[in-house]
Every structure is written in C-alpha cells, then in structure tokens.
Image (cartoon, rainbow, N blue to C red; front, top):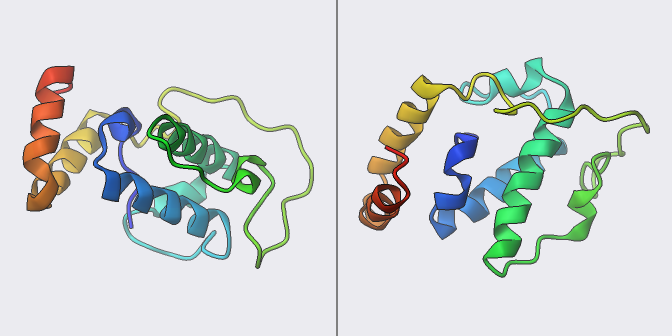
Length: 133
C-alpha cells in the first residue's frame, strides 16, 4: 500500500491508478488509523487531506473514462461499513497535499515503478514526454 507522489497521478498506468482508488477508499474507511509502514504518515494529518488526495485520483479516473462511485466525492463519506465523519469545515488543499511528498519521495516512487516491469517502459516514455524526470 502506498500513496503515489501526487505529481505522478496523471501519469500513473491504469493498474496503479485504479489500485490507488481502492487504497484511498480503504484508508478513508475501516483502514483509517491501521498501521502500515508506507502510509503511516497519512494518519498524522487530518482525514481531509486524504479526501483531497482521493479527489485528485477520482478526477484523473474520470478524465480516462472511469466512473468512481459518486458517494466518494463526499468528504465525510467513509464507505458502506463505516459511519461518515461529522459535518465540519474542510481544510483547503496545500501543494503538495502531503508535505511528505517531497523530491525524495518522488524519487522513491519512480524507483518503485521501475520494479513493475510490465508498465515501466510505457511509463518511462510518458515521463520523458512530460519532462517529469
């Protein structure tokens, strides 16, 4: 489980993008606060930040023709098995949403994608054309 560096979201291969949606949904629901080494930093921030990040994922999904369940667009929604958050004022988005998503984390994410041989060649071509690296 990982949250990809947010600058990579528009470039993520299909499997990673859809997997990211599932992971965000799990973290927003019953997974909130459950320790996991690569995402523990998420729990040191407001759940609003996870919603904002998830919104970026869903926006990219829609650009590619996918239709995430509209219920996830509610910042208070936590899935069918968990009660929603109480109404409150939500945080504005920072850039990056998570301060942990710095240049070192971007490099870590890029290295992780290299291990996914089935998608890396296509991804590397996309990165080169976008001049991300």
